[in-house]
Image 1 (cartoon, rainbow, N blue to C red):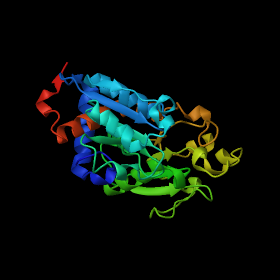
Image 2 (image 1 turned 135 degrees about the vertical axis):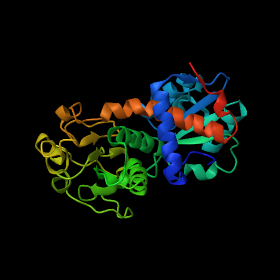
Image 3 (image 1 turned 45 degrees about the horizontal axis):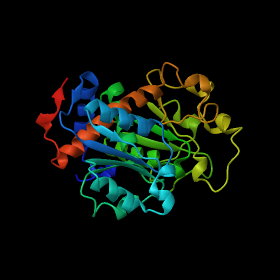
Image 4 (image 1 turned 90 degrees about the vertical axis):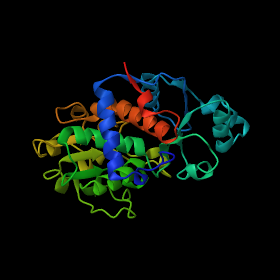
Length: 301
């Protein structure tokens, strides 16, 4: 593995290794006793991903370099490539990038000589979110084989749906999709079911928000919860052991009833917690792959 761009570049063994590494970091404090710089280049708004990468970096002892597009040379016409090359030139050891284009990596991967981590690529992929979702499911069930997982919401515009569906299927889960008319993505070859069909048999209900910023026009959502979301009535029909996931931000009262966000079967805030540890694992993994650190350098503290 070179850059961490797609969940599809990882073997099942590499995914398991990252999950186990994250569990280790969650149980015990580790740090890298070497000065290293991580640049967080977020060209789209972010709370959880950006902040959890920052916390992950600081837990590992990395110096986090922040970047704000609105006060950067992007406003003077600087390209993505030149911005990234600047951070490489001034001494960044790893780059964490989120950008609104689906294929931004194509202009970087052959010419940047430090590891890049994809923190979100347009509608295409979100591999670190996928990994924290996998970690949350793995902690809950200890496996993926034969779990029934339904991904619900704005499938068409969701990078999370794409990354998760492919990874879960490869790991042995049965993946189903549920979407309001017009929110389907027919390029994903998974069966579509209604929420009422999915709820009684699924082990994991993974909800997605409507991504209004990626739509040509804003859609009315006043009846969305009743028709397509997770209501209290639907939640009451879930299996006793079934869990609720959501990558957030959450639109309470739209894709999920607000009272269910922190109910006993919700793992939404557990996902956020797991985001720190899986991103610690991803950071150390790419740094090791590039020979920037050796595994023996990571010390318990």
